[in-house]
Amino acid sequence: MFSFGYMDRKWRIIKDVCFIAVAVVLILRTGFFGILIGALALVWYGRDLYVLLRAAKLEKDAQKVQTRTQSPPEHTSEAQDGKITVTDLSGAKEVDFKKE
Image 1 (cartoon, one colour):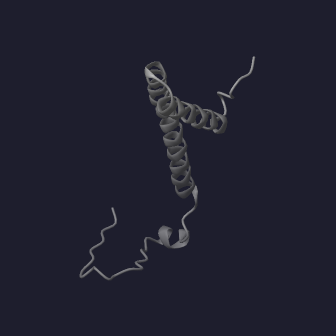
Image 2 (cartoon, rainbow, N blue to C red; image 1 turned 45 degrees about the vertical axis):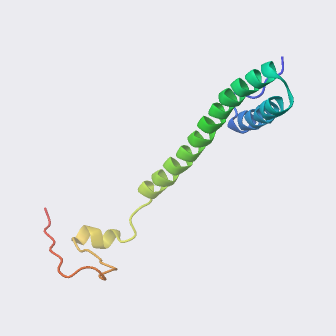
């Protein structure tokens, strides 16, 4: 039996886009039952497409955050000495720092 690749996100997105296009054609070109079936398909596959795209975006954002947190700090020797490097003092008038 033919599978639309339910484990591969790319093929699920392509399938959803195709079925949404068919649903729009049904809504625009048919009678009552075509509009009913098209509206149901539009809601079903539109929701699935939205969920897939949102999951892909959230995974990409999480991967960016993970790579940022795993990268070593640039000034490791300064951090070990207890020194702080301040690069932008445009809005600071007075800075207090206490090491705990």
